[in-house]
Image 1 (tube, each protein chain N blue to C red):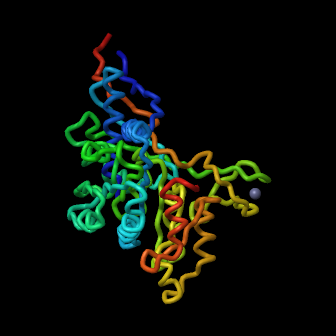
Image 2 (cartoon, protein in one colour):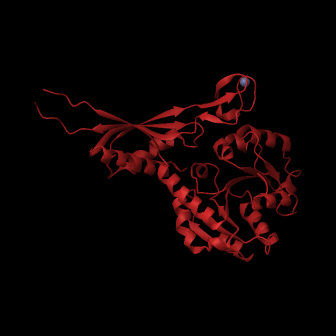
Image 3 (cartoon, each protein chain N blue to C red):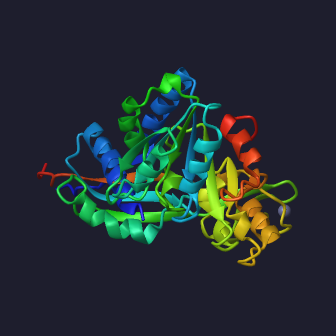
Length: 120
Length: 220
Ligand SMILES: [Zn+2]
């Protein structure tokens, strides 16, 4: 399993975003994981808290959005792929060699933790 | 009184962008040196090292080759490969179950890239993790042996989906283990429609010509 490596890369990317935004910490982050990305969402969620210790992401809530595979059938247009059936149209079985969606592994959003605001 | 609204920043960035950046640097270095790099991935025991040994032996004197081999701890594979006269450098990955672009970049100074025609990157035996990591290779070969079962391509679709060629190894054992060739090829084609498939046996030598053509970059 390489989810610990993925979690460390995620923390690097997120930390950079925090720096760019002048934020010290994040309270939550959302990650999009394609079904064809070879990353298991549960394993990533399990690895993240330990990897985040001592970083600006410590304690941040990680949400993983799973993105289904989408291919293009010559007859049926855009179709949702079932990962266990391969790159084939679920309607007619035609090969759909190009993955239009479903191989992503990306940091989608970060919720910055703001310091408590003073009364105005 | 104001309430602290959470500030949400839309990022939409590839988590592995640092690896992809390093992979692009590797790819540029390989192109500048004129060396063809082949990333080999498979399950443990699928015969990567045996195929490389045979390749180094049979193409010795014809193609100038070297190997960077990723392994969890031991240096057995590199030692085996050096017996065939080619340079083989170990990349010890420790607990990490895949090669990444930075590990490859770190080992490159040990090679005279300009003097090489082909550099093999033998990945850690694993059909999951290596698929996420571009190393900067020109081509990715995924190996599956006849002894592993025909459903591997559908169990590990991402690895097969990133292959430039799929090699079925240990064809000399196909009959003995009841290997269903047509089913295996159908499953490979489901995971990667149209990918070239090479069937071979490193032991008997059957099918090696097609593999050697791929190594030289003469086809797919
Ligand atoms: Zn269709």
